[in-house]
Image (tube, rainbow, N blue to C red; front, top):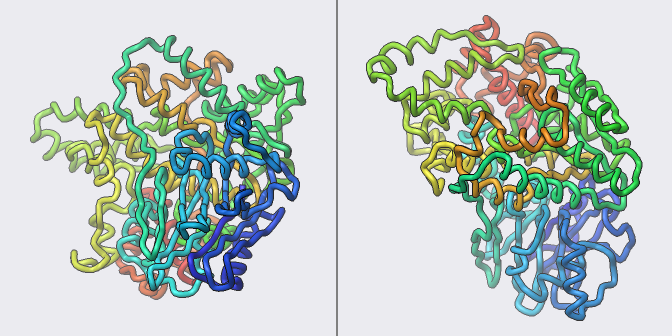
Length: 622
């Protein structure tokens, strides 16, 4: 796991500054390659996980001298790929997956991408053709941003802050991106908050040559399956696939562990890790759980139960409201506004976990892949709800839904009911957008003051993505949308940024593309046969006690509603004022209304308020 950066035209000093801003991603080594000073160059910072020797240092040049690679990530099937290459006469000077990737790319070009199992973002420079290839992994686990420059040149990096060290980049605010941030609490790819910087989308590659570049996809999920088999048969197929994904991610030359919340996702991973450790005759695996003083948010007793059942070396790490002191450092890690406060928890959890291990497996993606969100149930119920008379839905139910109260103490059922009744009358794409977006189009229009001609136009990022789904069946389209938006733009973004802030490598078995491809071939009726996570629960029953499998779902979120009334109250008063909002380009009246409704307990706007605090913190840090 590392940091990468480079440019088709930059001085060695610029490349070094870009590299230095990525030191936290790779504290074990730093490298730089350049054709000549002022020409194309690649930079690298190294977190040594596989082959800790200098032979695996990067940027790495091929034996023939033609190709230079700067690679961030892990190729989990590299031992098999290496054996295949050795059978064809290739010889290796290191034991790294980097060299396997380099030789595979030299031999097969971009056809090699189909053979990779892993997470990766890499840059390959061809010295013979003066061509740059940038590639991001299928799901977008590893980040990659780039900036077109004057004269047709191009710069890139793992993080925005590193890219900002390169001269000639337009760092002006993209107002449309700001609108999408308010909608999603993150800026969806391919935009960033800056006009001159863009994200390479998951499953895409960029080719640059002779002053121009082209971007094209090489992989995309397709939730279109129609296989009608039984749950038992599906379990027989999925359990080995998930087991393989976990075992592949346990290969490392450094200590490893597992984030364990006590929920289905992380518990399945921990169970399979413990199973593999026993099979190999190794010591108990390390598991780590964050605890909360607020009972509605604390899952530690469930995590402890799983850990005791599996016999893990379990560590509990206490969280507290002091986490909000991490605001500025969290903002700096993203390089742009990022409004999901769960990032604070991962920041603290990663820092404390890194004191024990270098690699941690986590259950991110289980909800998207195995249909684990309550909104999926809502999307399926909406079809039945629309069979009610239109006058009843439009004139009675929807208006009355506005009066449903909400809780700011971690209980979301009333809020979900209100959102369902308010949005289920819309077409599927607009309905789903209303459920997953935070500031709705009307609120964003009021905040940004857009007239439809400037960058303040609200936009429809989630609805537009939903409408591109290859299947119009609701569950297919909802999962397709989340795997392409909420997963990479939100969960994977904070997982990478926060873990790499502390030199911790996160590995995510449940979004192994082989697992996703196996699930998406199955019919929606099977994926949601008995409610949320039908198939993963069936797998879990083979590995865990029924009490763990059947427990109510509980998300991993901080108690923002509680904190806003206590520790965060002074910060809100200081940062959210008419002057600060005007400096951010936002109108004050809508913000004042949010604060008033939150204070009076009429609505839970805690995430919206936090996103505005983050926006002001980012603005003042520029």
